[in-house]
Length: 482
Image (cartoon, rainbow, N blue to C red; front, side):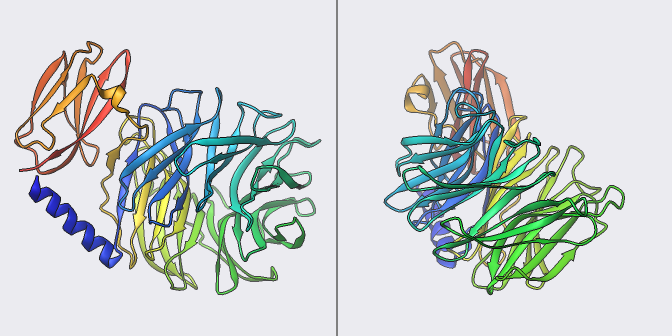
């Protein structure tokens, strides 16, 4: 035990000292768990939001999951009603707490509405509010204003044509509506991203249908926090273009998205640069790679580079669906390195942000890694392109309280030769053991007690899972140490 604690301490001090923290973790329970947004706190821990059906209240609930600077579970909680809530972004201000921005159909005016929840720093819900009209409104991104209000951007179908329009809602710190905007016409338009440029101005990115050309173009809007639009512009040449995300570099707007130039089945990743007056400086399209779309972008460290998240579904992708490529580029577009998320089923992005140690952190979801469903995935890339080891570490998304596991005993833990499992609950009928990469090592029937021989297993972390037809699966982390 002392050897293990010493090793952990040495590794932790080394990682923190050199700012090279990197990890790849999967959080999941018995439901569908989607990672959508992440924020870093002043102590270098992180809070993640998304939607999950693992909490057993409602079809799918918005949640907050806190992990420490090394990616270890700290706490989680869930929010919403009896239908569907999805947390798209989590915003944080010290001594105020968290704001979850997303959408809901448990309450509100239409099929879906914008959703905003205020949560204190201990994960307790303080209030929930909805915003929308008779159609569907869904949030894609959100940003804090200087006075702890929120600007939420996304889409609405509440119009005469039933097409999508860009929809913006600005609130004060109490969640009261200050202003709204609906922008669009006969085609589908939506806002996918909003980033704060200075104390009072923001840039919104998305797509806009132009009726004169019958094509979709990338769209940027520069506006003040009072709703005043300073300028708006569209970007792209022949074919359809769109902007998915943006960041700022040397007083320029760096935007990423895609292009469909109707040349067969190819969707091409696109990269846009514009000055702060909205004038396009460059447009790059990476043609001929198949189904690829630049989905997210963020700066990192103090360099002039960016990380771009690409979703690809082409000849290099897994057979079951899309995969994720996290690529590092210097500006202007000199490739530096890649990290690939590759599984047999779809991998999907949520958000990527720069971190205080000079790296970045990504949240999204993978499919079928542990339970056969969707599982939240977090990838931390350290400064200097320090990529994590590829195998995922299984964790729990739903907190298993002491009351829930009080009828299960796992001992000793840490363990060196044989793990004992005991219970007086006849509902547990199966035991499984997984290694830290998610590989199932052991499965057997269970009835009240069992000894599991672990003498042939290497030192490290493992997950014991107890299952039964009438109970939720319970997972317990054990440490093998000699």
